[in-house]
Image 1 (cartoon, rainbow, N blue to C red):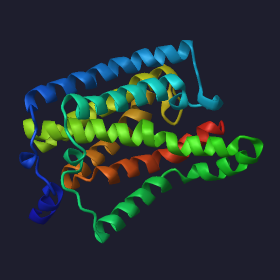
Image 2 (cartoon, rainbow, N blue to C red):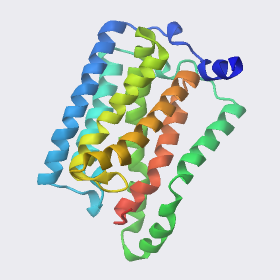
Image 3 (cartoon, rainbow, N blue to C red):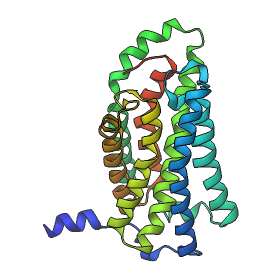
Length: 259
């Protein structure tokens, strides 16, 4: 049992060894921003119901301009990056925390990325069947593959793990930080699905189906990512795993495939 506990709680870099310029102020601002982001999700979902702007006719709201371009890219990537680098004046090294890749790390990371990609292999055959039906298939493939990196992998891991969770770990403790950041990470997924979901994520208007189809799996994945971040402090691998999970569903949407 002790070995298991030691394995689960070992950290490459303890939060106690991470320097923050103003821990209390930064933590408060990030918590406030995370709560604002949940409210913003409600507003963006409403906008999509009224003025949908699907990118290349994608059939999933995640690939709608309001969701991808405004909600995710602008408010979860550009603004947090601006705060982190320009306002707080941190550097890239403050995110990498002395990370030095080695062969073992690369192999383990590659395996996790492969697992993430394979979670959604059910999309492969439908995508292959649809590609010949679209003259602009190469463009759809490129956008479908790259978009999740810039609206999911980078912004979600940057904000909820590297920025928010790390500070909460030092302010409180690691388990509570993972729990709170995981709840906030899950919370902003719910409003858009409640208004717009139609499939495995749940049914619009049916909160129970959304909580089961989106809330539960997102919280579990978020808890794993949170634990992985607290243990290894390897932001590039987390970003790539997250990206790998989202690639095939994203491509499916651009070829108007629904599950």
